Image (cartoon, rainbow, N blue to C red; front, side, top):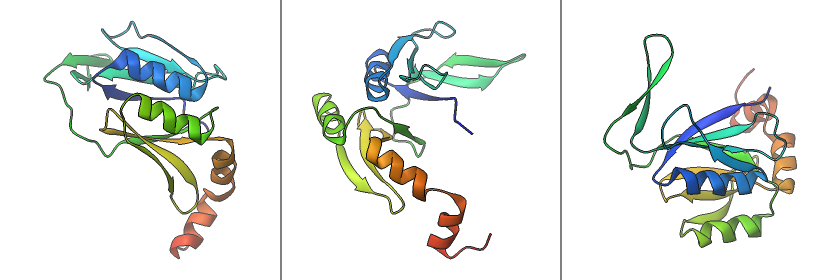
Length: 153
């Protein structure tokens, strides 16, 4: 079951969406439903996307559907993060993050490795190159998780 899309916030939504589109081998476009927002599509163009909102935008339950409120910017780090499949090798991912002045490093999470990229040094993106994706798909499942932590299923 795929995750279709996720929304994040950034100080520079256009630049962050362009960065994420490059990581996923896709393209970024404006996101007209809400002002000043962008969306990054993956290379497969199968609907997999990341919506990027300004840090001033907050989604709330509206009367009939989701509403976007404009509030004071939120720039604090967040526990929310996403792991992305990338078409690029880890060295390129690290270089791209450095080019933007963001912290990045290769990390071992136990059942998988990833390139840890700190978007605007506040939001974690775990990018996985081809080898990392294969390892993730092999090891990151309920049975292996239960075994790794001694849990019963």
